[in-house]
Length: 263
Image (cartoon, helix red, strand yellow):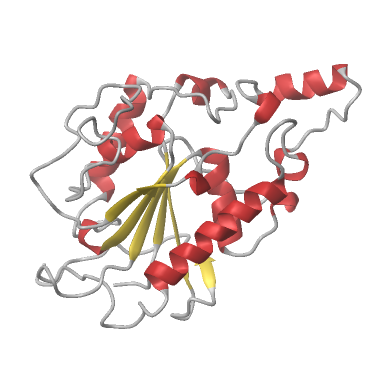
């Protein structure tokens, strides 16, 4: 079992992600193709001998937006805990009626937390616009048309400093609660029987810009310099540590799949 990891998952395809419109607070459904791809991702990457080992998940953070929550459902992790937005526990109905939102195949005891710390970048006046439209609008008003969200932020929305502050809060919470002290040969579930081993992986399901910013802040990179990271709709990334030390966070470019004991 490798050192503790954080899996970042961008929600599946929406109509606005298809045409490049900035989607922050607007609630959109996944497209049919987006749902299909997330199901395929779950089948390919979730399992005791795959990248995301459900039994080794300690916690799941998910954005307040329904498109991220639906993505978590479609990954089919086998969560013991009921989804917080499920109709039986929430008075707010989801944007899309959920089907197969829970399973009898329990594979993880990870707690599920909806947190605004991982909501999408607040685009403010740029909500629903493409980058080209934003630059055109700025030029028509005498503003610098060479707009870059990482440097300039969003009019009426968040600046890079705003985003940095909330993500740094999340990174600090995640490390202190789920990663500090969880290194070494006895850490992790490793396919052991229930009650043995301490799960040490974390899953974060959210959005494109905020997850790219999260990865940058994970390794202490300033957002204003443009972290030059890409995460496609429905994409999965992995963050971890070097030299078995929580003080040395790193982006895991590629790792071997985990094989349960006895397999």
